Each structure stands twice: as structure tokens, then as C-alpha cells.
Amino acid sequence: MNEPADAMTIGVLAEAAGVNVETIRFYQRKKLMREPDRPPGGIRRYGEPDLARVRFIKSAQRLGFSLDEVADLLKLEDGSHCTEARAQAERKLADVRARLTDLRRIEGVLQDLVQRCCAADGEVRCPMIRALQGA
Amino acid sequence: MNEPADAMTIGVLAEAAGVNVETIRFYQRKKLMREPDRPPGGIRRYGEPDLARVRFIKSAQRLGFSLDEVADLLKLEDGSHCTEARAQAERKLADVRARLTDLRRIEGVLQDLVQRCCAADGEVRCPMIRALQGA
DNA sequence: CTTAGCTCCGTACTCAAGTACGGAGTCAAG
DNA sequence: CTTGACTCCGTACTTGAGTACGGAGCTAAG
Image (cartoon, rainbow over all chains, first blue to last red):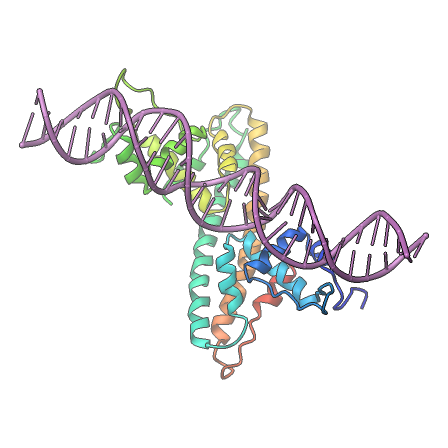
């Protein structure tokens, strides 16, 4: 292994995850991340799983999940109360699919716009408005 | 026509669009919507295009566009400076496609989770973490 | 052993996207 | 012509997601 397996300080962790140190601390306050107990009078150390978690949070967030929703997703992690977790996942799935549908429409419209743009010699009457109205 | 063609008050407009009156006013302040000039000493009236615009804003927003980005999208509406508009649209398209990719992965993972959940007799070690890490 | 550059912690500030509020004007129905 | 609902407008508050700050306490390198 080249990467520090279990020895990152908060600064290194933040750097590796591409976020601000304060952001890590913020997530800890929000209980989205554990804060490793520190060797009495010392400085906390983080490992790969912590890095993974920050990345997870950021990914989910980029998809439009709020931190509260991310917290829900993270609760799915421990296999306990399986049926509840499943219901949760199903709800999120529906959610995600709705988003996908919307995004695909927008993709189509944008694609169309890009293609037709300038084609008609300066005659662009943007079709997005129409396309998005029925949403 | 059954719908009031061009005679909505701000309250009716907001209602029709499913938003708060204050939200309309907020959008006006942000220049996302025009405010129709009011008959001297009177009350402003809104028409279908205004309704369409609110819906557009809300739709784009649901897809994760910020109000500033929505403003950009709306600038595409008038066909002027076509090349600029096209570049704009292309950037947004790339953006949208990145989102789509992410969302599809999440969809797959969630689907998988739902399917396998409870299958292994209470053994759910959520695979989302792994799946999202490489994002 | 000192010191620069961390970490830790609390508190406070910022920014986006609204929401709420309160007084004054308007308008339509009784 | 008054009353109740609604508009207009400014200002202020809220919530989510961080950022910034400042005084401590560590700790590794010279």
C-alpha cells in the first residue's frame, strides 16, 4: 500500500477527499461521520473507511440528496431492520428514477437545441421552455 | 378557453404554479421574471407565459440547476448571440450527462440492494458505499 | 527546546433560496 | 360606502450547507 492505511490526520483526510477540513468537522457534528476517539491528549487519526464515507456523502449530494437524506442512506449500511431498510431503498429508487426521467428529457431538449442551433440562420426560438412546461 | 388567459393576479398565478406568492415576488427581484407594469395605481396581471416561466424555473430547479443557472438557461430563450447560446447549451448538456451517469449508477445500486435485500437471511452489507466511492 | 504548522473546539459569519410580517393601497360584493 | 380579501413593498427571519476565526494544545524538524 502506498496510501496511509489508517494514519490520516483530519487535514490529510480532507485533502484526499477534496473538501475543507471544516467540512469534515461539520459532518461529524451532523453525525454523518464518526469522530475517532483520540489517544488521550492527542490528535485523531482517520482511515480508508472515513475517506470512503466522505466520498459517498459528496457523491450522493451531487445527485441532489440532502445531508439528511444521505444520513438515511447511510443507515442502510448496517444490515439491521432489514425490511425498513428495504422500504427506504425502494423509496429512494423511485426518487432516483423520477430524477432520471426528468434529466433525460432535459438531455434530449438540450441536445436538440445544440443541434438545431444556428442551423436556421440565426433563428433560434429556444424550445426548452415548451419542453419543460409540462413537467 | 377555460383558464384565465391573461388576467391572473399574482395570487392566482402562484396557486396555478404551486408556489408561494412570495416566491413569485422573489423571482421578480432576482430578474428571473418580469413584473408586468401595473395599470396606474392598480394591480398587476399575469398571463400564460408567466405561468410557463415559473414552471420552467421549478422544473430546472428540480434537476439541480441553481437559480443563477436557470437565469442562464432563460437567456437562451431569445435567439440572439447564437454561438454563445450554443456554447452555453453544450456546457449544460455535458453537465446533465454527468448527472445522468451518476444517477444511473445509483439506480443500479439501489435496484440491486432492493433485490438482494433479505435474500441472504438478514445479511445486508450495503453495497452502496462501495459503488459510490469511485465517483 | 523551540517553533512552525498542524489539530481541536466553540462561536460566528456567509450564501442561496425562500418565508414571514406589517402597514398601506385596491377592488369587488354586499 | 364599507368590509374583507387580496396586492404591493420593504425589511427581516429561516434553513441548509458550509466557511472563517481565534485561542488553545500537540508534534515533528531543526
